[in-house]
Every structure is written in structure tokens, then in C-alpha cells.
Amino acid sequence: MTGRASLAALLWALAGCGGATTAGQPDRTPLEQAVHLRDQGRFDDAERDLKTLAEAGDNRAQLELAETLMLRGRHAKAAELLKERYKIAPDDPDLVGAMARALDGAGQADEAATAYARRLQLVARDVTAAVRLTEILVGRGDLVQACMVAEAGLRAQPDHAGLHSALSRALLGRGRVPQALEHAKLATNYAADDASVWLQLAQVHLLIGELESAKTALERCIKLDPQNVDALRDLGIVLLELGDAKAAVAQLKRATQIAPDSAAAWTALGVARHRAGDLVGAMASLENASRLQPHAPQIHANLAEVALDDGYPRRAVTEARKARDRLGSTAGADLRKRIERLHARAVVVALLADALCRGDKDGAGLQQAAEHELHDAGLDAWLPEIPKLGAECGHHVQVARQRCATSGTAPAAAPPASHAPSPPASP
Image 1 (cartoon, rainbow, N blue to C red):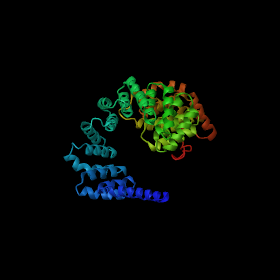
Image 2 (image 1 turned 135 degrees about the vertical axis):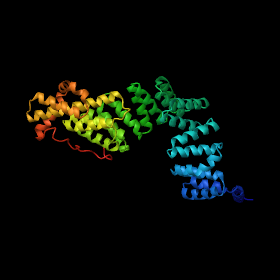
Image 3 (image 1 turned 180 degrees about the vertical axis):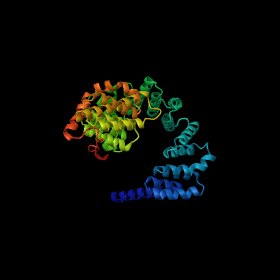
Image 4 (image 1 turned 180 degrees about the horizontal axis):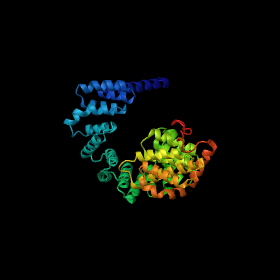
């Protein structure tokens, strides 16, 4: 046999072996084929085939169908699909796990928590379930139970970053700051490339006033996840507290560009612009925040402060009144007092500026007008403070008076309309 003939024989032999191996492989089962279709992104075909198998009594196909529905964001339908079997097979760990995730994704947090707890009874080392159950418990304020779940999970897997981070949040809620900081740091040690653990560490540093440490952690988070709106917002706030209003505005603009529907980002941007002296931009940003979250008292209080600084005391009165109206019964005494004082101060500024614009020097009449307006606003406790408020707000009175001098309209005539609000999509 020639060399060429030997080579040809070898190629044929190899081809034959390959063909025999392929032919000898078992065909996919119908369930495996349906899952294969899903893995290829052919969700409609996979869902159709899995539904047929599930209706024929294939329990594994039912679970895979539920997984497919969840992959498509249809968690409520997945939960409905599993409901009957979940009632009769509460000890099936795969079923319980799928049900927990379906309920969670459908926004049924309490029911999901029960299912996650059951899953952990059946599979104690399921740290993913432990993390999510801890987060749900923290969210509803059950902090002691949250700590217990996270600690149990860490006994099973002590180097799990997600559990350390979740435990940090629970401990922080309980006021156990040193322990919260310890677990937040451990989370970054175990998962240095996970942006979320750096955000949690930053939030602990923020709570205890360690601004430089918070800044470092937030910058690390943003480097890993440049689109992280929470980190951008918090970094903007930190920079503002560190005295760099310009840099704060830049970070917060990025946050509003990424998440134009975030009232928190717009509020922080408004405060930063106010601090930077951009009163028109501050008003526009805060008005965007107010449109997104109209019942937040702090936003209206911020609007009142900007209006005062910009020479519009009647607008400040209007916004301060809105802030007071939106204070719930559980509002802290300090916040209530601050907003009431802001309201009273705006009233006094408006009356003083109005009097100056009219050339009215009737001090007794002005005192009486202030008392009358504060009484009507339910601010009788501030009546003795009128002279003090007037003495403190000379600058605001002069700014409002200048508005009057240039426009010919008294500050008390009407609250101004928005300066020039920017739409949420264009910060």
C-alpha cells in the first residue's frame, strides 16, 4: 500500500469512527429537546413543547415550564402554574425553590419569604435562598429574624459575600454599626469584583460619617458598575458634603441621565445645584423630583429654600405649606419643626419684602399681618418668633425686594411659575 493510499485509508477509518460515535449517541428526550430549544433562545417553541409535556403529567416539564416563564418575566403566571402541585408536594425541594422565586418575582414578598424559609428547611446550604430571604426580612423590618437567617447561612458557607453583605444591612438596621462594618468589609474581601458589596460598605461608612472611606468605596463600585444609579447618587452627596459642589453636580447629572425617573437622584441634583449657586437649575431639578414623587415633604421643603434664596418668598410659602401638608403622623419632631420654621420664615420674608416694595413703614401693621397669616396657617407657636425671624432673614428680604424693583411686581402678588424646568430625560 502506498503512503497516499495508507493516508486515505486512515482518513476513512477516522471518519467511520466519528460517524459510528455520533450515530451511537442516544437521541434527546422530548424534555431535553424542549430545554435545548430554550437554551437556544427559542422561547415560544420551548414553552409550547414544555406545556404539552406538563399537561401530560410530566412534573419535571412543569418545573422547566415555570423556569421558562420566569426567564420571560412572567413570574405571576409561573406561580399560578405551580400552585396546585405546591400544595400537595411541599417537601419537593426543587418545586419549593421554583415557587419561592416565582412568588418573589411576582412581588408577593410575604408568600415568597415563607417559601424561601421552607426551601432552607429542605436544603440548608442553599445560600442563594438565604440571601434573598434575608433581604426580604430586612425590607419588612424583621431585622432579628434576618440576622438569624444570614448567620445560619454563613455557618454553612462562611465565605459567601452575598450573605455577609445582607447580614451587614440587617445589623445596620438594628444599630449594630461595628458588626455591620465588619461584615461589609468581609463581603468586599470575598467578592472584590462585585459592585453591590462596595455599595453596601459605602453606606455603612456614610452612616457613621466616614466620608472619605465612603467616597473610596463608591468610586470602586462605580468603576465596576458605571451605570449604578445608587452609587452615583451617593457619591454626589458625599462630594457635596466634602465641599466639592461642582463634582457633585457632575455625578448627579449622570445619575439622572441613567435613571430619569429617579426622584431621589433629581432631589440630590437639585440640592447640589442649590449649593453650587445655580438656583434656576436647582428649581428645575427639584420640580422634576416633585413631579415624580409629589407627596414627599422634603422635596417641597427644598423647593421652598431655593425659592427664598431666589427672591420668591410667596413661592416659598406655597412649597412650605405643601411640605407641612405631606408630613405624615410618624414624621420626626425635628423634621416637623424645621419645616414649620421654614414656613414661618417665608411668611415673614414675603410680608417684609412686600412692605418695602410698597414703601410701607407701618411696623405695628406688619406685625399684625404676620400674626394673622401665621395663625391662619396653624403656626401659632411661632408668633413669639416673628421679630427674631425678621432679624435673621434680611438677605432674603433684600433679594425679594430686588425682584420687586426690577419687575415692578410685589413679592406677595402671586407665586412665580416654574423658572425653566428641564424634562426628566434631559438633565
